[in-house]
Length: 227
Ligand code: NI
Image 1 (cartoon, rainbow, N blue to C red):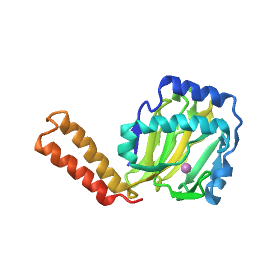
Image 2 (cartoon, rainbow, N blue to C red):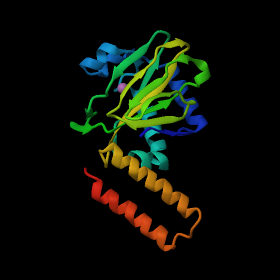
Image 3 (cartoon, rainbow, N blue to C red):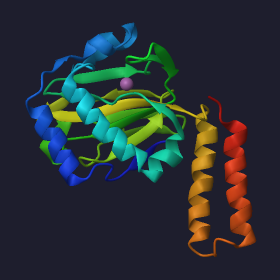
Image 4 (spheres, protein in one colour):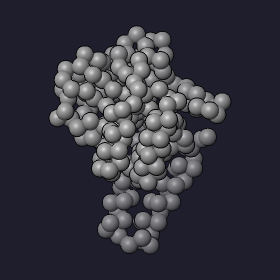
């Protein structure tokens, strides 16, 4: 399931993030990639331990915490600190699947990556190419969103970033371990949640159908979630 979430960032948050990134230090993106991905990865990143990455990551985590669509689509157990990447002209990232396990910085813990997210930070009219291409069981999806919008997709998906041919594409990306690791179950829960929201717009909250569907949703999460 691929879900696009509009306006994750407020305009002033986006402007602040872009301003800080203007003057930050970028390094070769291969430092955080596994062996296979490193061979096809050609981009720049802000070092994970840079003060800017941590400050800007907090802004994004705070925005995610109040985003009901992200909560419903990802059912997050824990979210890794957001990272920041940049593709200048000629830069690209060939087909790969993100590593399944990542270290949680500073904690000595490791987590499973169930959901991948890309938060676009550059307006699409400012660059050519740089589409995120996600391959899933339903085919190939090419994603290029307005700045401040985000796409969420299963970390099990093969994906790539096409070469940038004009301008520079900046984004934040991060992984989530979900309470529900199976993408199909997450998909069904997301659809059910949206159906309940739709039903609640037409029926009172104490209508027996609303009460029963809501109970069903929560009991499915209880049944399927794992930590
Ligand atoms: Ni990737």
